[in-house]
Length: 243
Image (cartoon, rainbow, N blue to C red; front, side, top):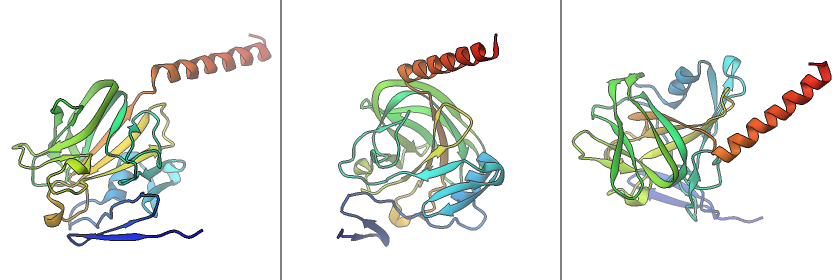
């Protein structure tokens, strides 16, 4: 099969986009004294990880955990489900879903960091980030069941506001790198959001200025079926052993 690769240069940023319209933006190595994505992921999930392309695969104590890079560009863009979305279903620009909890995990930036979302009514703050490195605080939960939204990162003085939907950013470029984390001992969908907080033409492009972990509960119907299935299995097991 023949396919075509289109290479785009923007402020020195190179994007290779296949005919499917899917692409990921490059992440540069961290500045001296800062942690890169692999180091941050290892600190979060207590094990070693190996980079495989744009993904990180767990080893040793982290065996079975995969941190999978999501599409930054995918045409048509689509809507990514926060509860069960997977790579290739939509870009990480517009989200849909249910009940989420978000926690600040790292901050390597001189600028203050605020995190929230926009579901069409303007910026809604989830939390301000305090601290630096991986010693940070900031968390909140919100029920977005039935809503569509875009993630938003802001400076404290609102000089730079970046949306997960890169078409809304004033520099026209993407400031969010997203990973889906699988293999954890939880029924939640787990995501990592890595932000770049300066205009891309003047930034270091290491996408570690703000790192947020997002966890989403399954939709109620899915959770009910999962619970029912577990009860059926448990009843069958008890019958077999004579309870």
